[in-house]
Amino acid sequence: MTSIPYPKPLTARDIAAHTPALKKIPARTARVTGLLAIAVLAAMLAGCASQAPDISLIPTQTDAVTSQDGLFVQPVKWERTKPDCRGDCPRLSVDSVVFPGVQRLTDLVDHALAMMTGVGEQRVPPYATIAEFEQYFWKTAGPRDEVMLAAKARYRNRYLTVIELNSGQYFTGAAHGITTTQFLNWDNASGRVLDIDDIFEPGGWERFVALLEQAHRQWVNSTPEAREDPEAWLRLWPFQPTTNIALVDIGVVAKYGSYEIAPYSSGQPELRIPYSQLAGILKPQYLPN
Image (cartoon, rainbow, N blue to C red; front, side):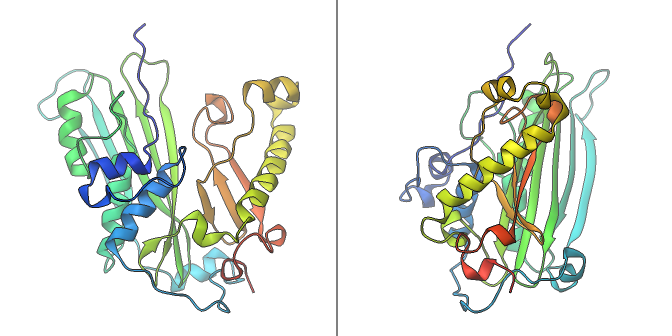
């Protein structure tokens, strides 16, 4: 069976190489996830606006209440097969969102989804939007290749819009598909994606990772497949930190893609840290009053 080159996450250096305006911005670390790359791109599109330190950006109400004051969201959904194709045909589907009146965020979601697609060993895709990816896909896809791109507003209030991006890809000849996930924590006032340094107190990230590792162990102990032999599971699927985090009403959610901390059958695991454990770790404005 032919080996299928699954997509690798893009780094800030990849984005910088693809976008001339970003070449002067170095990657913060050698192992940077797509969140930082997208944050760098968003920061180039808008200036930063300061936020008063005594204002909490996380209201105590639930998402169902706070979303009424959040950005207006409209769905965009379609499914297409390769034009003029007969028999087994490549398929592309999009189940995304747009933000009327906030074109910068709408464009960013479109760009981020396009960048989450796989192009084999090629690190920087030769496209920057879903429309450009579609044209590329019809030219290069195998007969049963399928790509699904999705975005939804995971959490909204008057200050923040948290978007969850997902891509699912099946390559002809593979045993099954592969999924990836990405969060964008968007500051409505400044019009940019928040980075780790925006959210965490100095030294807070290391303390957060320790809490995340505890949550991971609890997740392993509650997972039926892992509970039979947790130590063997952890040797195969050890904990690893991720910067793919979302600020939501219940706390901070960390989400992993396929094969990152569990086998394919486990889907995309989520670990959750409640705000009650994050005092002194998150900056005060990212804690509920």
